[in-house]
Length: 93
Image 1 (cartoon, one colour):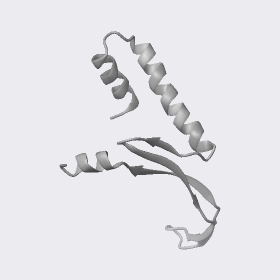
Image 2 (cartoon, rainbow, N blue to C red):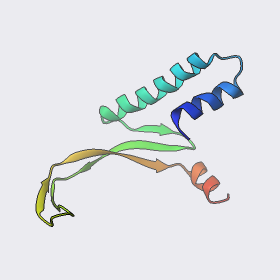
Image 3 (spheres, rainbow, N blue to C red):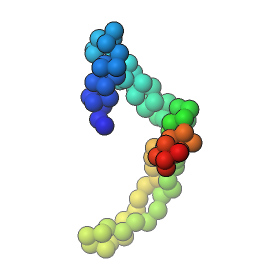
């Protein structure tokens, strides 16, 4: 599902809301999650999962095309851990 499909589905299930308002709500939620992660905070949505930031140390990598060694800088990457309810639903529980 992409963002526009999510907005459409929420709009259909809530006919009392204007689609532009639903779009604003969805965009605000995503922006708040992004800003929290950028600050290094953790975002937990009970039953769904938790977003956090993990640090990857600098390392020596390898260019797959040439085989040449390449220095890869330290970086921070988003990480998502599923909640128990989501895991259970995915596994038929």
